[in-house]
Every structure is written in structure tokens, then in C-alpha cells.
Image (cartoon, rainbow, N blue to C red; front, side, top):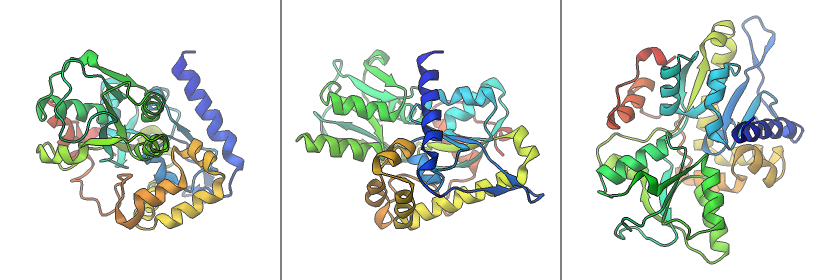
Length: 332
């Protein structure tokens, strides 16, 4: 077993081991009226906010190692998987996995930050060191596209180091703030990093809001992030339960956008702040600060989001990167 598998296994044990910490989780029902379960896997961080009342659900596995998730597509055991949408579509298309994109969950919370550079400063140049996460993920893809084609940065691929997940970027940033000139990061991990660095008297500057830059460059209305994928074979067998799961997910997203106070209350029932952090990848207070006043800095896509359809939104991003559009058959 390699390191990624061990980490994924640890996340699975963690997800199940914490199931006694709180009282809530959704139970969906099949068309026959008997209880049916939807087994699902998600990364921690912003996408996990869409499942804020699922902390005690033993059928949910959350992991901070997003790069371990493609193996779950290959295994085909999960009813539903949340993953970087464009990356997931590409993995499914290349390998013929039995999953289709059912709905977009989030987008637009990627940032380029630095402890040594500020917005408007010239690019460091050939000595620049950049730390990012998930090389084939949307955050890294959009960063490289903007940096090379819109900002005019000239750097070698070897100047960018990629870690497995955004949580790992934060850990490296907090441990050695000046080790890299630039860090690609995402909310809510960004706010967590700012708080830890501020406690040590270090300022973390936002050099670019990648979402705003993507739109300004004319590449598309938004940068997609996480999407929900359904196993097509499982969907045929328990369509009613999985449709209910999808509907409930959308309801939770709408609540997380419009009423973050309710979300914080539910998260408080789950356990301590540390337990919530371990399970979801953020603390309840971050929901208040990032989702309050309608800011939605977790970047969730609610029922009122105008994305141009699941396939249209995916292809606005994917073709901007110079790729062939995704076929409609990849979408539920």
C-alpha cells in the first residue's frame, strides 16, 4: 500500500470513528419505502459544507487528500463522489468509469497569496518558487493559464511544486511562510492560514483573486471547482434514493448560502471545533465569517446559480484551456 492509500485509509477510519459525536444525518428512502443508503465520498473543505448535517453519517467518507479520490472512481464502490469537476470528467472520459456528473457543488474560491509579495508587485522572475495543489485540478490549471497567458509570467514548470491537497499547502505555508514566493490556495483554508500567520505577526497578502482574474481575462464566467458524480449502475438500482440525496444536497447548499447561522448551529451539535475541523476541513466560526452577509466565500452554487447547464459550464472552462469539449454522455 502506497502513502496515498494509507492516508486515504486513515481518512476513512477518521470519518467512521467520529460517527458517534453528534445526532444528525440524513436517511433517504427507496421507492419501496424501505430505508436505502447512499454511500458517498468527498474532499474536506468547501465541498464538505454541502453536507454540514451529515457529520454522523457512517455512509460518508471525507478525506483531506483529494488526489486519492480518482482511485474511488476506478473501484466503483461509491454511489456518489464529490471531486474537482473538470478533472473528474476527464478521468471518467479517459478510463470509461461508470460515473456521470450530476451537479456542480462549488467554484470560485481560489487565490494566489504571498507573505513576501503584494498585489501589483512585479513577478519575481526566474527565481520564483510557487507552491500549488493537485496539478491536474482546476485551481492549478486556472492559475497556470492566467499566469502564462494573461499576466505574462515567464517561468518553468519545474518552478511550481504541487502537493496533494489545499490543506497540505496551508501546512507548508504556516510552517515556512517565506519558503515559496507564491502559494495557490482556496477558502476556507486561506482564512485559517491567515489567522495562524497573523498570530505570529506575519501578514498573508492576496496577490490575485483567481476567480476575478478568470472573468476579467474573458475565459468564462467562473472557475468551476467541486462537482457531484453519481455511479450510473447504482443509480439504475436506487434512483429514488439518489434523487432524494441530490435534492437534499441542493437544499443544504441553499441553506449554507442564505442561513449560515443554522449551519453553525448544526455543526456545533456534531462535536468540538477540532472534531468539526477533522471531519469537514473547517471550523464553525469560518462558516460565520465567510458565508455571512451573503458573501458565500465558500463558493457554493445554489439553486439560483446561472451556470448554463452542467455541460455548458464544464465546457466553458475546459475549452478555454485549449481542450476538446466534454460529451453530453458524461453528464447525468
